[in-house]
Length: 270
Image (tube, rainbow, N blue to C red):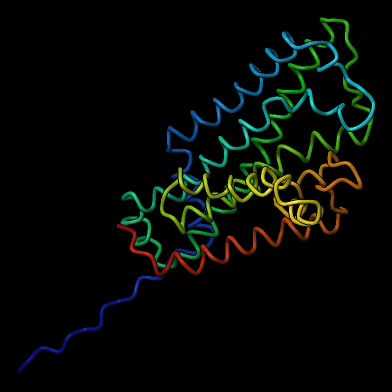
């Protein structure tokens, strides 16, 4: 008499809180990520101090108009793209061996992806705020020491720029790079793709003429964030009204994350 086979008991997939905690533990365990965040904060201070010290007073002194923000954001490009690389790495590690255990423990890959993107988005806002604060402190100290005019922190426009430009840029570019890392399976290539989308259409605008310049660049994610931060001059090629800028940013994030969510379950993690 043949023994009847008992059906294997299905182990339920971990819920959202468990998955989120698991990805958080994985994130803080990555020494390169923590070192990268430390380097980002250090760059914000060092570049700010250096540029404010060696630059001509006319370049760093607070002036009327939109140029008053430029001194604080000397290091913003470096720090934003460094964070984008860290974010892409957090996704790319799943294709470099980590996924063999991740997706066994949590079979629902979409849940893992959303948990990672949530952490990347929140991390971008937090690291961006710290970066802005440290950059501001370093710039203000040098301007004061040189007897130059400092940023007026009672100005709502200044506060808006400080609270939005770098933090939101880090979150947005980090989320885009992470989503593209799922599509191309490489952190470095994902950052290149993100950079091409954000930078190349602006660089080629003078070549493609007035109509292109007046329509395309303003709909890029970087330009939309600048409009949200209030640093894009109204009427310029890169300006969008705040509601349109917010919709533009959300549309980019929705498209990229949806593509990543569609691709991840269909991708061999090896």
